Image (cartoon, rainbow, N blue to C red; front, side, top):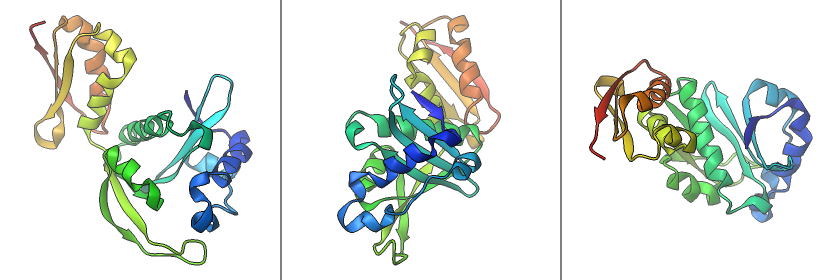
Length: 215
């Protein structure tokens, strides 16, 4: 479950950041005194991944102006469970809903392969800023396109259910990627919810076209 962080989460999120194994050793100065404050949570798009018991498994913070993924952490005990992938997918959806064209990421060096596997592109290198950051960091960018938003629609189990498990896809065409084509083998009436959802994502108005596919 991913939810919006509240001010009362500040201490738990701070503990997660400071305790991250990825920032031990040579990288320890980066997080040693870091605090996720209640004011920070109130100002920015901070989201928390948790389990049914309320345990915090990860967090991210999206700054809207200028667009940047400012924080991304997964609890040590939740590594390898797909939490980071879920957080990035959620972040890109929030960015699309906010009308952002791209999101900058100044990556922790060991995390660069993770971001690139999820679609980020390398655009530069950020110089050291001693004393806390004595190393170069990769500068990456997620391009927030309507195509990515449309792909997430059909990648979500709830929306696949509206298509009754059929094979289908959403493609983007035309100037500004503003014409969506939904191709599916189910009747048009069953695809209406997907069309409505897809045309509302990506930050730009769009038209939609239904194409009947043979089962």
